[in-house]
Every structure is written in structure tokens, then in C-alpha cells.
Length: 266
Figure: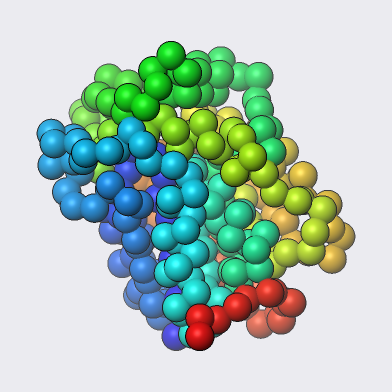
């Protein structure tokens, strides 16, 4: 049974993957959805009682946890990540630790930017250097504006209550620095990039450029854009269409053997 590891992004925790875990489990996959450090538990509790030291969380803390989980698997897993989780998928693929990778509305590596108002505004608000290690506290209004802009206020509030968390500014700062760098010229296992047409955090145009930055002609780097979706693409109405497209893509590539550098734990 092939394993899929789902990697959540900022302001979320594994609860955001519940529907996806059920969907892919029913398709015969063994599904794991680990929490980032400081993100374990119920989102409501994490909002009301932010974990001590949340603002000190760094990208490498998360990457190390995910890599440790990958290395205890019997074989290279499939990785599916959203937002910062999508960048982590790319980092693991670059290390040769994934059989296939899916990056959904992914933060792009190598300080790749989009000159888009929503992208610039949200990035500046979160990474604000004058806030030091103060966590970024999300609220229903900002969640609707940035994550759920294509949804009704009522549906956005329900999504916030069910899944939203606060987060560390340092994670995004690290994504934009050396820890977020990847050699996109090297051979790699298959990558699928998913963009959301109306995403206010990671514009679809940036997702497409991210996919196109992978230059090795012998490797697969595909791109698919879904219309009328925002950053909440994995949770809003129509998420099943995205999951179905990914499932078909995984099925199409599963019989092809790729040269990955997977190193199993001793």
C-alpha cells in the first residue's frame, strides 16, 4: 500500500486535510497528516491558547520533522503539500526523498516573487521585520480576505472556526531566505503544481512560474490551474475535483520508475 504524507501550510494544522485523508484512504492509500511543531491539537484551542514559543518556530524545525517521518517509511512516499507545505514538498523532492510530489498553491523557492497586490500585501504583513518573533494572529476577517475570498462570509467563518491557527512569522521569513532555496536544474521525481485562479496569497501566475523553473528535460514538472478558487482550494466547494485530478495524475505516473536518492532509516 503506497503512503501519502499530507503537509499543511501556515495558519492550518492536520485537520485541514481530514477530507483528503478520507478520500485517498478510500482509494487504497495509507495516509499520514502530521502536525507541524506547535500545531498539534484542536485549532480552536490553538487560537485561544497559542503554544509557548510559537513565534520562534522556524522552517527548518518543520522540515526536520517531515524528513524524519519520511525516513522511517519502507519506501519513498508520495507528498502532497499546501502553501508552505508545497514548498516543503519541493525541498523533499530536491533531496530525493519523495516518489512523487504535489505542490498546491505553493510558496515558491529561491525568493521567487509575484508583483501582485494580494501577494505583496500578505507577505509584507506576515514577514514584517519590526514584529520580531511575535506570532501572527489570524482572525475571521483576514482569513476571509486572504484564504476564502471566493467564498461567502458564512462559509469562510465556518472554515476559520474549524481549521484556522495562529503562526510564526519566522516560517515565511525563512521560506524567502536560504532555507527556501532549491536547485531547480537537477533531475527530480515527478512534480505536479496546482494553482488557484483567484488566490490572494499565492497567485496562480506564480505557481505556473514555479513549475516552469524546473529545467531538467528528463523530469516531469506539470501545472494545472483551477478556476474560481482561492487559497482555500483544498477546503472550499469543489475540492473533490482537485483531489480527483491529483489522484488521476498519481495513477498515470505510478508505473514509471524514477531514479530517486531515497535513503531508508537504518
